[in-house]
Image (cartoon, rainbow over the protein chains, first blue to last red):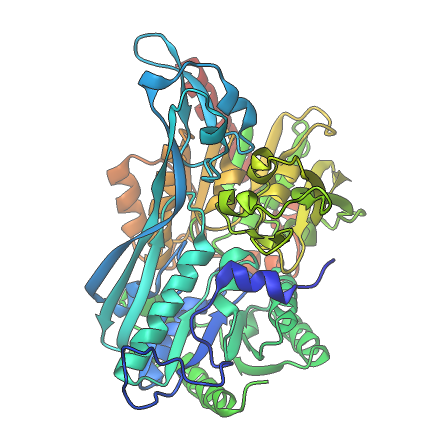
Length: 335
Length: 287
């Protein structure tokens, strides 16, 4: 199994200005006083549904002077708790999409033969004629079809792959996004959300960016963690939670990033929670929080509140304790 | 029949449903289970197959013949994915960014580009507990999982199968779409919470856009509110099954056990669910 290679991955995500830069990245247009670079805390999990977003909502309630970034662009849920008021909205255009101009098509089929993504289909139209069309969900926008077409019948159009927003919430500004169905370039949308959050934080002098990350270990996850000051992995005491945490940890630690672990619903299976603690010790990771299984977390979500705001749950105090540890970890110089 | 078990939101119970359904149907005929969540595969933790995934899965990357390359930079300009950087002399390849589309080889006037396999993951398959199981694993650090998903879905070496259950990755981005492609039915697993509902909506839209009939399984059916049911009724999406919030199921799951293997009433509920799906697919085919 090949380890993460630093150089190519930088290209995948191209994070905005990061704290690793020795000089504050102040653009020439803004000759303001030197600004401090905001710290980035990224919450992820490997396995989906372990409680990332509920934890982020709670941390958003506790942290002061921060910008929130929802990088789970595929299933963005943070706004459901934060009830945001949108103040900026933009279409996310990234890459290309092929379109066949029917009038010019000679129906030779060369495009279909060359397409590696099975994106060109021969379909029967309303008049009973066989015509070539592009399936936009399959098209990756490489442009090979347009190059092989001798009739000039294929045009490459800018592809809309989603939208992104800046909103105001009761816990500070939120940058969030929505990826189109079957969306390519989710990593680029994640990078854009993080860049917007960084510039917004600089603008308002916020010292922290709190990032809700996506599940998995692929493209959007790599884009979410690159350059983070601290990554918090939320897991649960199940065989799947433990397995997925290890893969996520290998990815994050492979990038040389600082990682801490939170075990959610820890009492669901105390033996498994113990095994996760052992795995963490072996990897040199500290478990910074263990949260009880409490249905109040769901009731809070139904009411559109964080568990801290909802109150009356041991989970609220456990997250308060965890936040104190995370704050200290964020103060430590980056490894 | 090919049934994709998908969901917008992660952690709703896709894998739990997949492994339990496969187990409940194992005696009724030949059943296949494909774990297409190759970023975080979990089905093997429950089935405990006696084989690992070791067969390499590759994707094509360009190989540049440096003697033939004139450094014209056409390939780098043609690459929509910025996987080739034009430099004085031969271009620099960033393999993780390559989509294996073949444009660079096509445009090279010197025919200096050929393509070669680069390993990005593994697949494995075999019989376990009467189920034909196939799964894959993306190498850590790799960004694109779709070639591994396609390899898991490749049933060329599989025995004939009456039912194929396909465990999808969460979300509606390219990995989930690649998994659902070609399925006869998409079972969308959700939970009755605001997050569950919010992520169910794009999952339904995805299935519809792909012309795959879909229905909903509400897992942990009584933990939240009624908004998922209201949505399904308004959108005319059938609710196929409700799985109660049962701590015994959650605990069995947490230990890597298949609840249906030891609970005949749960298994029988899943068998009824499968016959209902079969009828729905049959009805659609004959319409």
